[in-house]
Image 1: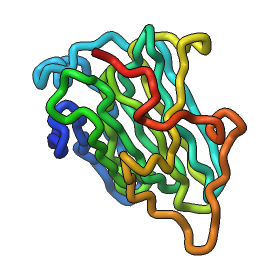
Image 2: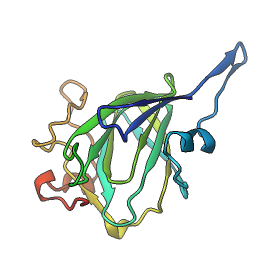
Image 3: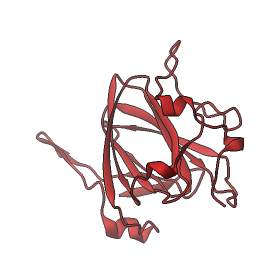
Image 4: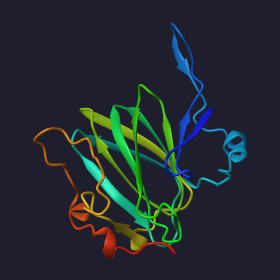
Length: 182
């Protein structure tokens, strides 16, 4: 696997080594020893699978207690995936990184605990698989507005289309008012 740091060094793009031939392909999507060698020695406790139609925007989600690190990959379609640093003590506090993840490019994104996460579905349909380092705890979940002017995320929205949001996501807080980590 090839691990590439982003403009926020803790957020890492993972490129698997793909073995392919006329039958198809094979790759390791996770190998604990390789991840531990670059400092990701977290134990994953939950696997999630999300399917969404084109134009859906989910996020920006995080948990104020039981923060989750996430290892994300797309198995159908394409998304624009975003991580926002919400650790007040970090030099990259309030900064974001985005990456295109698709079934075709097979890239993965490691989003460590201490970050808000969201994604936008670019293709007609997308399915996202992700491993989480802690359990989902809805009582601790918080949402930051996807269109927060301070964050100024450059979402690749489809021309003329307003993103499809859940009721929870329409009620997200501004970044300046959100609970964050120290």
